[in-house]
View 1: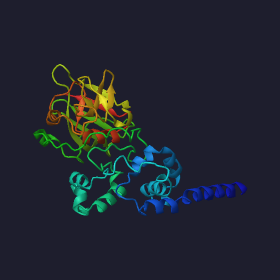
View 2: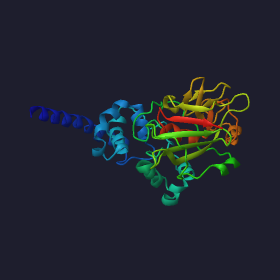
View 3: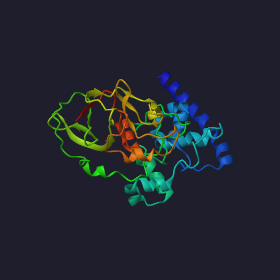
Length: 319
């Protein structure tokens, strides 16, 4: 029992230390009580892992992840000189409404309403608060290893018109017989080098990978740089999904290696590390053989694949 009261006393003392700063910080900065749109809780948690580690076991008692990080910044972090976000404009309401019309249809274009959606749902769905945001926490709230102080990753919404080959992409949520029995992995990735379509399937009621959950245009290897056919396994997600240097001097993000020799899934390429938009010709080439042997995807699709399929996932490349 004495250990219980000792732990209780320690918790109370810690809370006193945190809260004792509240009056000074609030008076000096006149900070709002609720999380404002200029505070990036994900950035704050990743930039200051000591704070995240201290609050993670008890997020609920502070009102959730965002409220907990804001509680610390408002009462301690501001006085300690910690940064609240990578930039003041990190949440771009106009971008968020444009990129996610399903959200705008319900929440309109009001910045605070859209920010409320992002906090409640958007982050866990890996939606981006601005066009060049890289998530430093995954959908389960675990650190990905991405550096929040590094230049932001490129936009996941390309402005280039979608290629006409998109009409060939099969409808998602449909039955697609593969005959591949469940092997312990939740997903199977199929790449067709003729149609340049990448399908991700999960296990159906018959015990095979037959339930299509996402179908994406891709680019496989062009003449002289063929993507190898066969069965492979994703064995490495590049650190944080960050920048990867390509053999032709370009850069890509969201890399996943599936075969030695440099073969990987990754986004369409960017001319320079830190660019906000990919090379337009590569975006337009999705749906055709255009790569140096890797499987290129749109930035959006590459990010989804990176955050969805784990190492150990089987990849079958055919045709």
